[in-house]
Length: 438
Ligand code: AMP
Ligand code: MG
Picture 1 (cartoon, rainbow, N blue to C red):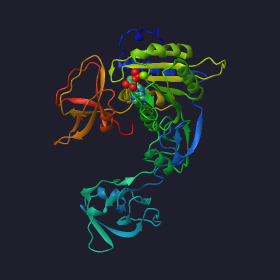
Picture 2 (cartoon, protein in one colour):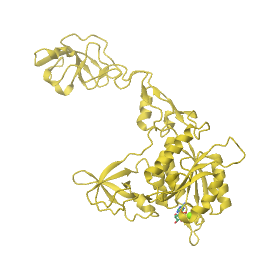
Picture 3 (spheres, rainbow, N blue to C red):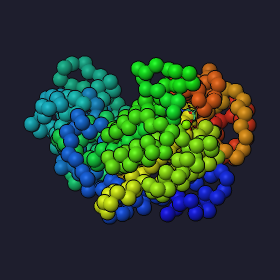
């Protein structure tokens, strides 16, 4: 297996972020091809449109109609036959013979020298192919309009039947993470239900003797478990089924049992804590008994240690399915960064999404940023605009991996690439907006 501890990429002391992403994507695609795939692509649910937001479309959505269903007007104005524009007459006068509204077509004929008052969306009469917008016309009485023929060409301001979508064409292709516009599009085709992929079952747990649940008293040296809450928020952005496995003590028997329980219920297990240098040996031993998990030192900040692989405890049940495992670092910001960089794409890939990479954009750095080449950094920042209207970013205070406030105040990451050195004020930097993602 590509992620196995014998793989040469794991022998390098620091794994490039891109290599880690590639290894994860490769393992997920191997898993998808297995006969007992973690998330069988044929595992499909039918849901009504109002339940379909953020789900992943399982089959192409074919249109059963032409959209629009008939030629119609793109403007409020007057429809006429555009052949009169080809004559040498500059000033054209047409007699108004009727009105067509959206939903109320005009049934009569429009002869040469005549026009039809028409509203946006109303069906074009068969004798007409052109619409002159209302604002380009003048009128000295209620029966006629005049306009200058230079103002338009034959065929303008008409929407053609099937111009948006032709009957039988895919309106939305399988793998789309459904957004509000997709639901509107499905409704415009008269489609009330969609076939979507089953929700992935994702178990989360926090490990650490120092962790306390909300509501418990904080004794000396203990802290509240925040990671399960940020992870729940992150996972809810993707509309998954979350299985909360709580807090697990740093004790081999409890940890092992918690992993076995989680794998019996979930397609994916995400833990936080217990993979840093001090604790990895202990976790490694448990993982060796439960599956095939690599312990990575990734060249990134924050989020250096991470475990990744497959859990398949041998419980005497040959048909037991595999569970994909992410052992994220314990630091609260590192959890969110590693989720963003590695977990999110893998979950989308596993659930058949066609677009798994989050969008990147660029902004001008307001300040200098210190950066050592040789690792990818994710700094927390606020996107704004300068006087010229250009996008700018400013870092949010202290950037320690445990300082969750820097994340909470931010609305984007500044992503500084592996080979990048210091950034000067006014340099363009890559950014990833949190909105909709984190
Ligand atoms: P670890 O990766 O277990 O060595 O943890 C690294 C740091 O993150 C330590 O300071 C932990 O106390 C902290 N930490 C670990 N898990 C959590 C959690 N669930 N919530 C908040 N902080 C955590
Ligand atoms: Mg720990």
